[in-house]
Image 1: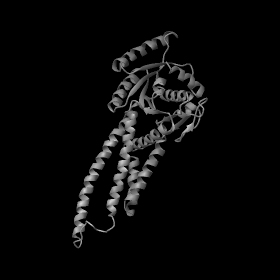
Image 2: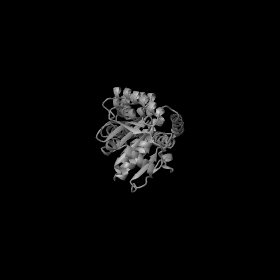
Image 3: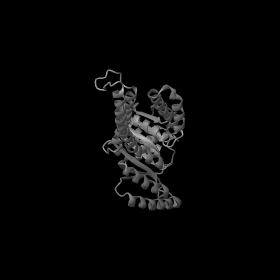
Length: 334
């Protein structure tokens, strides 16, 4: 079922509680897509990366070729949150220093140092990187699979495009009002300057006006990029979100809450993947475990009856490397 969902999308997000197997599922989906002829990219947004361990190779913040038998169509990438934040703040500092008087460069550096430790800076930087990867991924690949951080972090991240777009719109609105007031004041100053009229003046353009116009242009570009990301996230024909969980009490409750948060922001939940289901015919202990899991899944289905659900059995081996991932992918075809 999950592979059918992936075949219909350009972008697929996988999320859920930590330790339920999101990285394994994400990698298996991307590998299956690549072996079927699609160019696939799997991206880890979780600061505690497992993608490289799963594939047995070093994977950094640039696309790294992966896979066995994927014909060079599969790549992986791990977002480095610290490096991403450093680049984000460096770009902001460069822009501010270009727009502000030279004597304020030291103040800009102090502000950036404080911003590095401010709430939301990390999330904003990671969101910028995800925006880049969605744009470039959809250009260079047929499918981009995001292996996200645990539920709470992911829910906040998925809501950020809407929040930050509204925030940027507010900044633009306030800046436009400020510009009109400033223009009126400057106009009065010019008319009082030896009676010279603003109209027809051959004086060079006011540096303040040029700065304000560039700030407005930067904010508009940022708003448009965030709006583009939000459009992708809320377009069920382009992207979807699958929640991976274990048939246990806490993952089930967390899944129900994550579903509520994501649907509130307009994200399509295309599947629930219940991973590591205990067999019911392998002895009394596992049979009892299966019964307990069934009880938790009753709670899940009562809360989310219309979301397609797929169960993946508990395996006998660790899923590491392309051959094991290919075998795991076969379980996702049901």
